Length: 399
Image (tube, rainbow, N blue to C red; front, side):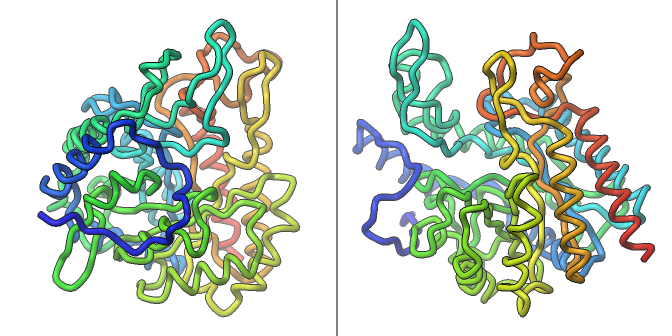
């Protein structure tokens, strides 16, 4: 089977590994292109219908899961635990608001991760390549473990297939919104590792779909308008998102929307804003001004995690629940003042009883090991955050 590709610029592609064995990498890519699709177009279209409803204000997206997913989490009990947390949060939101929840997991594919620097210095070890996710290398602090290995892309494919088998089967993914007992958990991840994403493109009639997930997003580090990640997203018909950080200018975001929303149903392009609790009040209004004509066709989602990372007293990364909550509160308030409907929240969370957010707060334990990448909410914290979001949305619905 020919490997399907999209046009790309000759510039260096951001956030990609350098494979030592290029011949092996090419063989892995050819093998991936010949494998069966991981998700079906009809399941992607079912999500598309639900997101169009969210764009109208008739549904709300609860998207969440791990920062970086280890292959070991493809085991059925792990996937079911994550799906159960999403179902619980969706059920909670629906009870408080009366608005159906669209449940999308950061799971079954979040095996690669962008990083700020290509290397890191570890005490007693020295300088090593940074861990970029299980699809590329291993977190163990040794030179061999950190060396990018293209065979891990095949492992990522197999892990995704195993994880998806534990979710609701595609034939039960109805095209309309359903009662929560039958509501699917859709799979999503960042479309970062293009050597893995491109060979999993599949044609359905005259349309091109990614078969790696129901929804994909482009990260804040790879959203360059003329870059290959944006070209990849433009080419596919899956619902997509774009992470928007505080460095994104309103004209730049408007150009991205024009490029990515042109051939999509309403609600199938999500702007996932990761602005920071201290920036959202003054950064969001100019974006709304620049997108006034298109605002009703977009999903306006809040990622309150990535703009609020700090160092705890023990030196490890943490995020404070007060900051996370304040960003959602401000996000919803700004949108309401402008007459724009909030469409969802995007969280990093885990079903495990960890202490990664609020790490170092008085009375909080410090014994939890550091996460693979970024701090995640535990179930109690996620529930408190979704309940607060639901209360705010219920107030807006009552106005």
